[in-house]
Length: 357
Image (cartoon, rainbow, N blue to C red; front, side, top):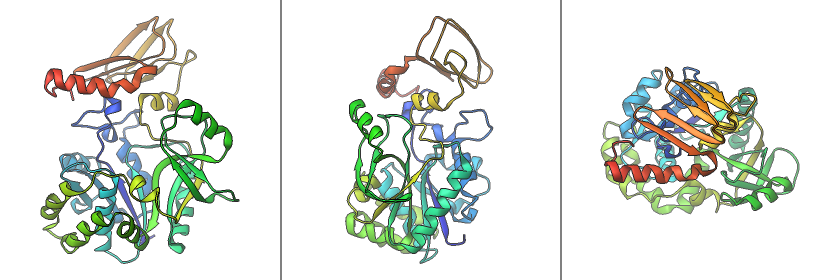
């Protein structure tokens, strides 16, 4: 267990969850289900069962430093890796694995988003343990694939090579498909949802960075001697804005030949949209979801209503809508049109000079 490290990526904005997810408190810092724990806290709670607390690193934007320390009082300040600007997952991971290199030459690393939902935690932890055993013995890049329960268009897919067992070689990565293609993927049995959770040992990911994204790798190699020292932030602020805005999927996983998938089923959702939150939430007999506040429904069905905890909504004759009331913004939007929410945020920013972001 001492060799196990976890990198929690916690720098996203979550604009598709506006108005609950805002620039000053994105969705990873929110308690969506009234459990008393934010998505970030739930992620931390999950991984500290398989990784020593001192080996958990949180990568996030510098503006969330105080919020993270408030929500995770168990960590030390030097476990926070603070990005001066947002630069996607490849620079985030390159930064974190080079920091780990200053601590040890041998590490088994889990990389996870901070804002996913796991319903079957025991199954999830068993999957993680299986993955850790695999990467310790094999110089491979491992990703978790989720057995699809429906032809979902909101997730990327991983096609697996023929074979037996849960550990399979990856054949292809596919971006979010249209409805027709998603149906074909679902029915074929060859495709799994891409959970965005990765596992590898330290030497393998450093070699992959060197080979596939050398211009990024050299930036962090150059400043590695300053990482984990008082001068770290100074050098990160110098080089980070020059890093390419590239995902780890595009930069490495889609190109490398040593990529495997651990086929899994542990009640996963990336909670990326109001639609995915609706799917994962308990519903009344008419398919309505009520979160946080209190809602009385009359002649209404298939809605999701999210309010501040002390608020009551009375809703009559509404069908298939998102109703979200948070602070100074009320959103009422058809569930089928939720992809327009990002545009709503942009329009509000232009019209009101960012007041409601």
